[in-house]
Image 1 (cartoon, helix red, strand yellow):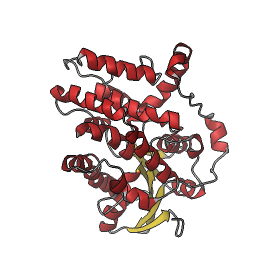
Image 2 (cartoon, rainbow, N blue to C red):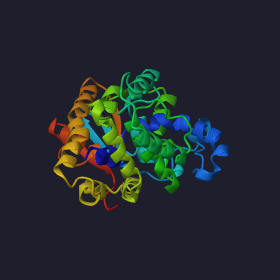
Image 3 (tube, helix red, strand yellow):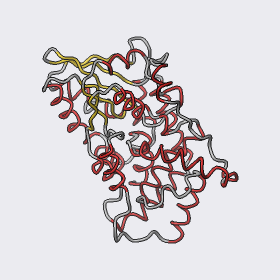
Length: 334
């Protein structure tokens, strides 16, 4: 069941690791495209120049999930994100822009524009010294998937479990979804451009630990089953549906994720979801509450599934005495 967690949970929880790969993938795709015509490479993501993008803000539509939280006379905000997207999703609308502008602390799961965070993430993602090699047939299968994804040698040296997860994320490019368009990265660019204080709610080591096999002997099994998931069309369907629900600010559909994803049907899958999603929420809520209580106005942007249900961040902060108000979706939108 761990393989289904690695593939579909990545698409559902949408951890930050794919954002690490996006800038390098742009270069790799450009280099590999002339040599990989037979692979039918997806179109190369071409992000706009930052100055051009900033001048065009705000975007015409607010997307995602947004809450206003208030305590001790100060207002902070929670924003539920998705880590892949479409080109027209990168520009926050006026309501999200206003919430971000009101903050003096902007928090993400990981701030991937922080050189230290990026360096630590890259270090944690490398194959550990002494880890057994994959069996030849499995290594060849993984290499074939890298070729189909047009990434060249970019993923070599990365833990094989993380290669599979990244390939699952990149498989959505044929449907118009790309890690390069993930809203988190663009909000981080905006916050840094405005010289706001940007920080991470988690550590790179924590996130990588969630995604790799717990023991070296299990790596091959995880990779084999993860590749099975990569080749399963249902994986892409779940990801596409979740991303479109996010773009429509469809909170009800995201809250009911377990009812339609087909990925939380067994006890093992539910335990993995608990460990990989819900168990992370108390520490993030504690961090946000501490920042707020020390006088900060916080804009916290994390994956949308961290926001839902009685163990989601809005509910946890409400139990800490915050007044919580849903702003997106707006009343009557769904």
